[in-house]
Image (tube, rainbow, N blue to C red; front, side, top):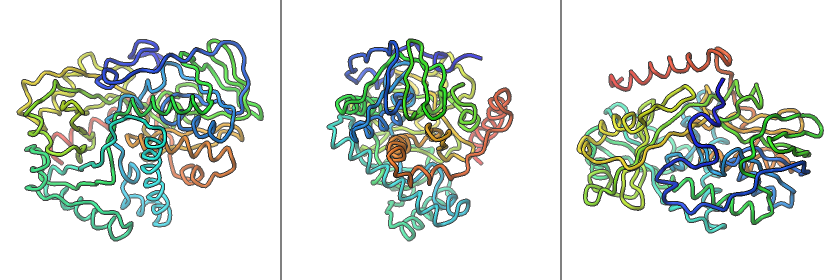
Length: 434
């Protein structure tokens, strides 16, 4: 089977994205050569791993972080940049499925995650264009009513305010014929994800974490004194944090059975000039109510950044622009002749429950993955929670670890085709308007 780490990109090179084009890269952190010793070895240089390394280093731990490509190379540097409230599943689903007490804990963890990201951005002076506001867009009157009811529920139950937008108010915000209303959550936010990742890396490095890029981990020997083997050497550590999300591959079979990699795609137009006001009239992000969500916002230079479409194999489609242009024109048909200057794909990790999968692997290895499209808040927080757990404060980690994240059916051989079949069914429902 192909290795997902190396299936779609030049090794060690950021994709040709608008994010990469508007970022000052960090100098390359040297690959690991030979043997070293650490209190904690962190595997993965995305939000989870960088946050874990930062928080551990600030607490005085000797930390080594290894990344197969560059820090922020994966989903952390490619996503839609939306920092949402709550969890990937809404509070009504959580209350019904897990009970009100657990739902309330998860709501507070979601609020804490947003606050954590904002605090890290402020404390470390990370220039990631953090802006308030995410709108949820409804395509039918029934969906709009559901959103209005949900806004009332979270206000009553969690004292969280969202503005309900009828068709006229929503079109004043987003003049798309595809939507007939929605809600606006100004406590949520959007940002430049790659700059956030590199800011966390810079802060972790400054705090004393030893970061090694171009360092591919081959295997982990678990036990009282785990050993992490890489291409160029090995790390002996007291503990290991597995922060690979959709790229876990063969590093741990149980995690891989519960975290499925899928691909999502983004395009960015040329600068829109006066046309920008026909897309959004305020500097907020939008996500809609489709099963395969469309999400979009205006960039700092007034381009439309639009995400949509998924694939479930290891390879990205040959023409990403064409794949995303189709849903983009459904939302904004008047942009048919606007050139798309950038197009890229990224791999994220999902779970069957759409709840993050946290796991203790023996006594010395912790893992967190499967953020299911809610990764900015979840992933940054996961790194902190694992750092806290290694220091004896495991309440937050254990709350997530207790959540149900069953394995995907079909095992390694059949889970991708089974998932593709299921997702295709839901995508067809979207197209038919169900």
